[in-house]
Image (cartoon, rainbow, N blue to C red):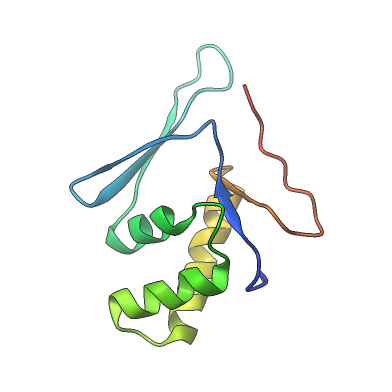
Length: 107
């Protein structure tokens, strides 16, 4: 479970753009011959991604998602937490202020 005061930030090696309200991310290949990994987020995922700016903590992101999509804070936090955990596991984001060190690889 993630702490509400955790602050996610985007991995600087990830290339991303917002196109027609959807965020597209590209993780460049790490080894020669590998293909880059491309992900496209839906409206909710795109909004969460845009709020991951290294300043907003998870509580603030869930509050904004709750307001934007007219759902309860609790529902917003649970859904956002699942998505954020997936982003972290995929190497798209890391956290600034956690006891456990999360390092972002730089090329």
